[in-house]
Length: 133
Image (cartoon, rainbow, N blue to C red; front, side, top):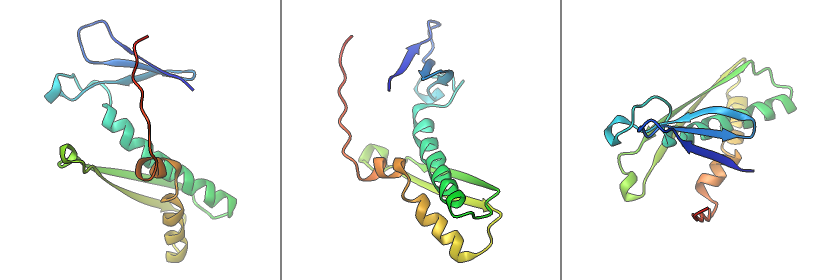
């Protein structure tokens, strides 16, 4: 799969991203580094991928097990205060509508912790190559 990111030609840091057929994805930078904050920044997309993956993973499990989950809300809180020293902390709070049983809720949390993005972020070696076209 290929993702294309193109700089807008208006002097801003804003980028337009295309992922498969989705071309309306915008990325901008925070004001403190010269951006306009007109769209989520790269950290936002990193963080939201974890929240979305956890919610989807738990929902797929709930559906397979015929659990009465009506909706899942994932709230991701970021602590980037030590990012420069190699520590980036994310806290994901999941709310499951339709489930009250503590044992089932704990199982859903366990399953959410197995989402592919969490594994990618925490246990995978990612090799990145940057090259000129």
